[in-house]
Structures are given as C-alpha cells and as structure tokens.
Image 1 (cartoon, helix red, strand yellow):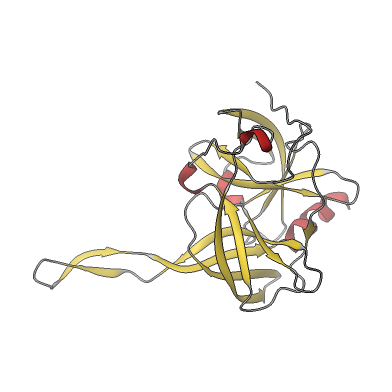
Image 2: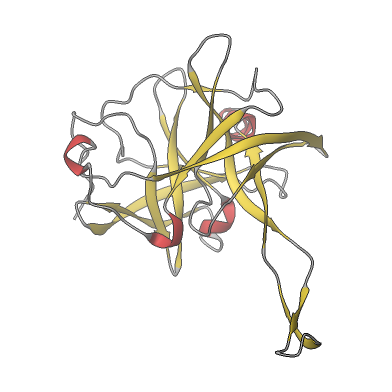
Length: 229
C-alpha cells in the first residue's frame, strides 16, 4: 500500500523511518523550487547504497517507499538525503533551514521517535502520520572541523532520534529554524561495575554522557548542490 499524504497535513515534517532492523527518524527539506528531499542520519540506512526501499510509518502500518539516496562527499558527515516520486507531505508550511543566528547557551529542541515508540495521538491533524517525541537541549558548542560543522547539545538523546531535526527560535526574527540533523550521543568512558562489597569487578558499562551530536543543516544544502552540478 502506497503512502497517500492528504492536504490537511499540519506541516510537521518528522516521520518514523525503518530500514531492515534499524529504526530512526527522518524529516523533509524543500528547496526554492519546492522539491521535496527526505533527510535522515546516514547510519540509519547503512547498507542501502544509492537506490533502495525504506519504510515510513503511516495509517498504523509500515509502508514501502522507493528512494534514491544522496551522500556528502565528506564521508564523515552522518547525513543522507533521499528523493522519491511519492511526496510524504502534501502541503508543507514554510520552514527556515539555517544554523545562522543560533547562540551558545540557547534553548533548542529535537524531534524523533525513540526506541521505535509510535503514538496514535494527533493522527487526524497530521495526515495519519504519528506525531514525534520532543526533547529539549541547550546549544553547548558549534565546532567546524575538517569540512564539517558539528552542533553539540546538552541534552539526553535516545536511540531512534537519529535523523531527526534540531530546531531553535531565531531571537531576531522570532521564527523557528531547523539547524541540524541528530546523529548520536557521546558515551562516557567505560566504568567498572562494583560488587556487593564495593569492590571493582572486571565488568564495565558505558552510559549516555548527555552530549548530543548533530550535523549542521548546511551539509544537506551541500549534498543537494552536489547533485545539481
């Protein structure tokens, strides 16, 4: 069964994505000609190549979507951009895609579907697509390095948010912008597990450090521009 987005879509662009055993998040990017591109983290669809089939959750089931996949020439950038003959948002609202004017210490939020959890709340207002989870973060640092721009957040990321958008309110224009694509979270160094007597064992664990790693939305633009050259 094909995806049939309806005209009453609210413009919320997040979709729950599945490829093989991997689940994550994707969202849409529109260029000036209103062409639709589907954005996710590259590792979510690892192994798909340049053409393949993903699944999008719609109307309480997973539906197939044939896509062409574009990657950045910088292999370290964890972003994939997909095109499809089927649009997943019929009537999108205007969104600004830019990391510009974000401030260190500013509140941000990121959207996604952690652990593949799907809610049926709000389906009628969102073209029968599930609404994503929303989590808050603080812009901790922006580091350009080796041709890539990484936005670090102080927040708590979970598996399943990969590929979702990082958003913030531009304090100058008061409008919301999509600044980056969620990639991963930093793990701390291995910690020893103690036994019941408080002595260290040979077992270790790694925990979420609270540092969220995301790649600037400018890299999506670069991927699309490379295709058009």
